[in-house]
Image (tube, rainbow, N blue to C red; front, side):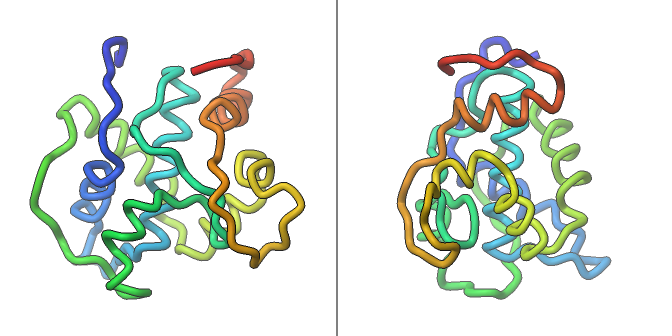
Length: 161
C-alpha cells in the first residue's frame, strides 16, 4: 500500500491528530498526548511497512518519546488542549491509517500513554540506566521501534530501515 512512501514531517501528522479530536464530545489533545499519538503512528507504520512515517527521530525524554520540533511548536500551550490548525494536510491515503491509530490510542489520556511508552523496549533501551526523571536527548532507534512493534505482529527483526 505504501510501497513508494516518502516520510513526511511530524508536524503534518500532528496537525492531523489535532484536527481530528472529537471536541464535541469533550475530547482534548494536549501536547503530551499528541507526542504519544505521533509516536505510535510512526511505530506501527515502521512495524507494518518497514519504513518511517515521519522524517524526524524521537528522543527519550523523561515524559516519553518526543520530537523536539513538535515540543518547540506546542510548548506555549502547556497542559492545555491544542486548538484546531490549518496548513499542509497528510496524503489522502494516510487518513485511514491515522484513523486506526487514533481509535486505538486516542481513547487513553496523556499520562496513560506516557506510562505505556515507559513500559516498552524502544524508550527503555534509549534511556539506558537513567533515572525516570533525568533529562535525555538520546534518539530512539527506528530499527528498535520497528522490531519491537513488528514482533507484536509476528514480523522477523530487521537490521536496518
